[in-house]
Image (cartoon, rainbow, N blue to C red; front, top):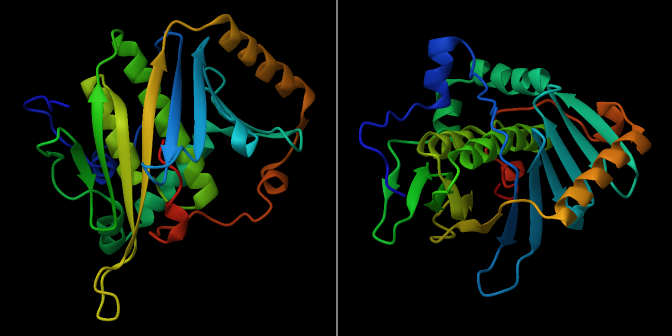
Length: 272
């Protein structure tokens, strides 16, 4: 990835101080395409999961078959719907509420909490062409490619931001660094080809000089235009949304708890 000269790197906390809240960038692009992501915890072994997201009709539909979970991001209706295929239930999350939850936590953070959850310095590029962003606790390195249609990168970045907010709803941690990464890719009109997320679980200490880390690798594959099979899968999801039982958030998230500022184990969701 070539970082454009003069690109100003703005953290979410700087956005917070300028505008009061981190503003949402919602794509109006109408490009239709599919993205498959293979996820690895060991590069020498097969992927531990594969997730597909179909971008069609202004909606972003993520299909996580292994977990029986479907996420439908619908900017036009201002909501994110999550479906549990096994239980045949769904919940609607209002985008404004999701954003408010994240921004409320951001505005209440101490300086030390901000330091632990935000990136340090400008993105860097290593000799192998990987861009790195993050801090001592959580970092990403990634390679990118430029799609033929720049709207694809904008739409994917918008989806990735909403996915990060939904993951924050699950894992109770503000997704600051991931959203900074998403914004950088959107600004550059690029997609991540390969993404590594390194989480420090236990820092080095006297008893354990090495410490413990977790690395998750994601590889992205773009398909455009959509196939008839893709369109059929979307139709099936939309039909399920009319048939599944609608749950309240408390019913759908049985072990609910307020989002908090933390870098504990719940920050180790799979990279998106």
